[in-house]
Amino acid sequence: MTKIIFGTAAAVFALAAPAALQAQALPAATVAVVDTDRIMETCTTCVAAQTQLQAQVTQLQQRAQQLGTPLQTEEQALQTAVRALPQGQQPDAALTTRIQTFQTQQQNARTEIAQREQQIQRNVAFVRQQMAERIQPAIVSVMQQRGANMAVDRAATLAINPAVEITDAVLAVVNQNTAAFNVNAPAPQQPAQQPAQQPAQQQPARPQGR
Image (cartoon, rainbow, N blue to C red; front, side):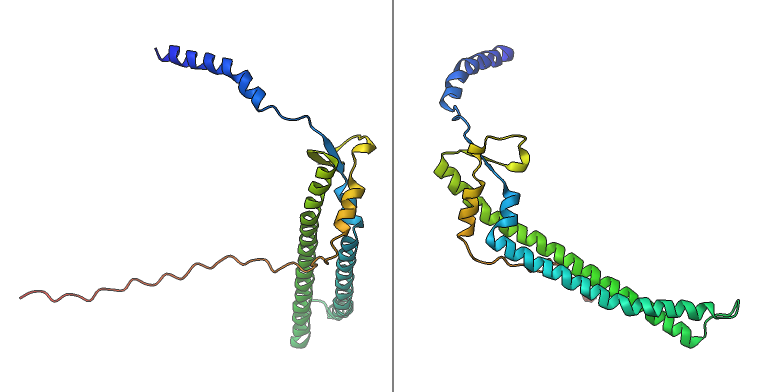
């Protein structure tokens, strides 16, 4: 009986499916192609943001050189001092302290440069996010103007008809917004610390009845 019921239901659905599918028929795809990479590279505010990001990279390189040059000089001097020691003799207290100071300064320099590199990487990602948020509505606007109902990125296509490319039109819309991008990403959120568990309070002992 169960098989008969399911079989009948399937037959009814099969009969009804064509009408349902016909009612939900999708329109023919009208595709527009957008070169988002070119927009991110050439829009006015994009170029300005890239210039500022490049300045951050240049400052980092200068800082790395500022830290690295005296460290390199000190490292060479320490190597010379250690090689000058008689065979089997350990560095004295002064030289040992000097070596330890150098190692601390070297580690601090590496940490500083690594942190600044990570910040620049976050800045780049943050700027690209803002660019995408600005480009997306511009694409939708041009699509509606041109009668397209689908947009694909130029990088995802093998060959296109130039008539379906709307990159220049989208770029013009994006350039209408002259608000500068923020090139300094917010600090990453720190995970919330779990509140310390309070030690269980001991209940006072109840006096035993007499």
